[in-house]
Image 1: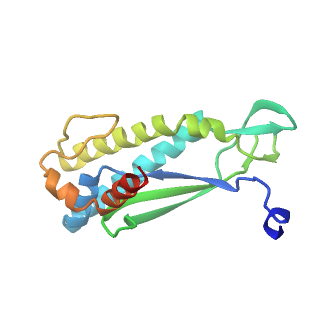
Image 2 (image 1 turned 180 degrees about the horizontal axis):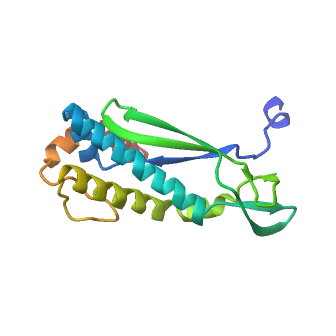
Image 3 (image 1 turned 45 degrees about the vertical axis):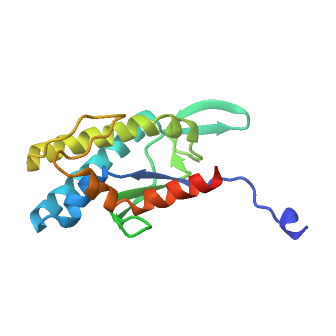
Length: 182
């Protein structure tokens, strides 16, 4: 009864846009020399910035509220980016969480909640943009060559599949949980 009486409203305080490179990039980043790590980290940050710019320009609107579902233009997102270097299983996994507040200043000067639907609608294109931008920068700056792109993703040419699997413990854990659940 206590839980039912004190259940929180279904407010969403914010959103987490998580961007990560293919596993082979994280492996080269983790095992590379200092210059390779610096270049990969910088390219990752620039690709993350490109996605934030894309989201602000194409997917960020405030809600009017009170039953009016119209879009309101905004000045941008209020967010903080947190870089992580490993997966939950401890494998190399360079990734960034862009944690956004569910609040934006409208072009009208008021602060309003974000309409989350366009953020979800643009998550996949944003991921494709991240991957393509990262591939371009790493090809240009480190001469990296890529395997065939599939669903927006491509691994670095020459990184053996066995090495990728070795550093993918978290994926194995998830697949085991899915198999157990049927």
